[in-house]
Amino acid sequence: MFIQQLINGLMLGSTYSLVAIGYALIFGVLGLLHFAHGEVLMVGAFMGLYIILWTGLPLYIALPLTMVVTGILGMIIQFLAIRPLKKNFHLAPLLSTIGVTIILQNLAVKIFGGYGTRFPDTIAMDNIMLGPYMVSSVKLIIMGISLLLMVIFYLIIKKTKLGKAMRALAESHLTAGFLGVNVERTVFLTFGIASALAGAAGVMIGVSYSAISPFIGLTFALKGLVVMLLGGMGNVVGAMIGGLILGVAEVLSITLLPTEVNLQDIFSFGIMIIILIFKPTGLFGSKQN
Amino acid sequence: MLSIKDVSAGYGKSLAVHDVSLEVKKGEVVVLLGANGAGKSTILRTISGAIKPAKGQIFFDGQQITGKKPHEIVQRGVIHVQEGRGILSRMTVRENLEMGAFLRSDSEGINCDLERVFKKFPRLQERLGQSAGTLSGGEQQMLAIGRGIMANPKLLILDEPSLGLSPAFVEFIFESIREFREKDHYTILLVEQNANQALEVADRGYVLQTGRLVMEGTGQDLLCNVDLQQAYLGGGCTT
Image (spheres, rainbow over the protein chains, first blue to last red):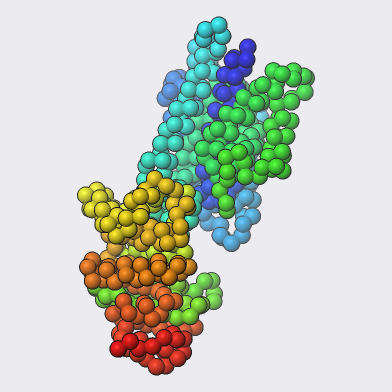
């Protein structure tokens, strides 16, 4: 029973991690809260859904396709709503991305309707016996893919030139430029990568919840924010671990305190406030900005 | 090699330098002197593309580089070692050095330059895996200069390399610059507060006062210039 809940928690948490990595990456590189990040996830969920519905492509093709689409969406948002802003007005990017949030949400309502849409059963729903524990294969697959994406992302950050350029930017745009980093292009690609991960999280959430609506963005945007605070602002590794912690904590809170009320969210946002009060740098240290 | 013609530049609408023209020839060490706020760093940042000049032109190797982006200027071989060192403190010493060679792909040349850096600054080799933020001020300065070398610079711009260092380290840094000039034949544009020491290693110097060039000459000339010494260098002629 406990192991089963643990796996449920890790699955949920790994999707939180994917969202929070994007937040942390963008916050780290630009010192900016990308409020529309949750809507990119929502678009990803719908993209994944419709690619599967219309083309019948399997998940392992629909997922990377969705990531490409949301990656491009993220870069478009950066290009249209963030890059042209004056640098000396700090509220501008936050307000601008809130604007993008509302635009994307309303477009989604217009296109997909305001009600929930069901995700088709793309993955065989067999349950797998792990020793004495029954675990749904969907959840295992989602967890596996999420963890795999995190490993790939981590390697990109640690080993590739692009990753090193992003880490240099996170410390100082001026220094990065003097070292030969193309600052504008790297910021642009940062949005692409962050948004691709959000899109992946969207597909995974769609598959595991089996119903999505244009309003899921805000929930996950806020959860991603909680996770980033938990892991430390701008700390991508903190975001990965923080997501898993929050996922497990939420699932355990439901199991241990079963009530009619949605304790899960009270619990997460309670954590957020406690972190803000007692450990504003998060569990794993935050980027000073 | 580098020539600046009538450049005026600054932050926003207020100009910090006015109509500055200066030149650095291949193989020269040129020092730019001036009090705090005279506009030295502004000139350097304008050369390396962090500030767009309000007026004037900058040429490097005969090509116009005015208004180009910093990474495009790095591409041409102008490497700016920032004041305050600009160390990437959360990256390791090795990663910092690798970032110096960010635009290079000649792995043989990169390895060769890495060896060169280790030879000059053996301390860095001992600390390769350490995160750069844990280095002492002097070690960070070595790292900053070493990172500049990793870029295989045609022109190395050093902004106040001796700032905030202990006297022994200051001596060491000037010794390194002398070596760059005599052994490695680097072309260097140097900004320094330590005017006397800087003039001793420099071929030529310019003096900047509240954003305008007021004097220029060879290192020896400036070192022996009575006005300059009285105005603010406070040292004396050694010959």
